[in-house]
Length: 134
Image (cartoon, rainbow, N blue to C red; front, side):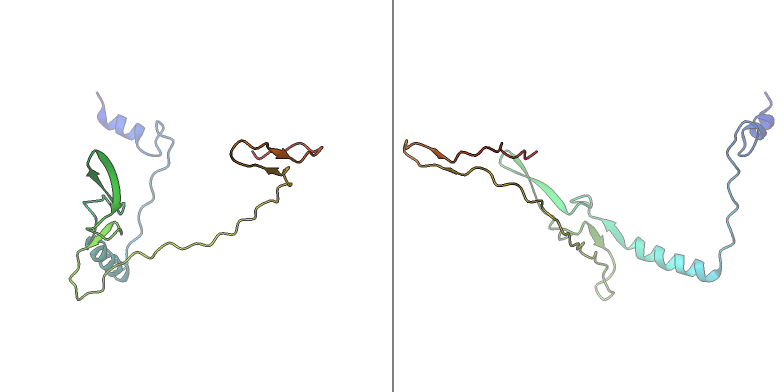
């Protein structure tokens, strides 16, 4: 069997593989290499919490129930920073968002007055059908 012929046929950009060959990566400057090394050091100091698996909520058993609470190991952040105490610790910024919701005005429904202890129900009759709420 001709393995070299098969490799040439199914190589990227060859007759058996229509996908183009991957681009050759550009040379990395020393400044970019230093910046990447610095970021790599920062990322090496962060670990996902092993108690809550990065979710911030740990599960525990209370009698026969499974409950959730804020993780005591990571204080609900989901990550553990392994850098020494003197260095600035990484904290996740809380997600804050403001939403504006406009609610449509529903037509007034017929009023009903109810009384307890078996007293009759009084309804106000209208010619309009009740509003559709779904």
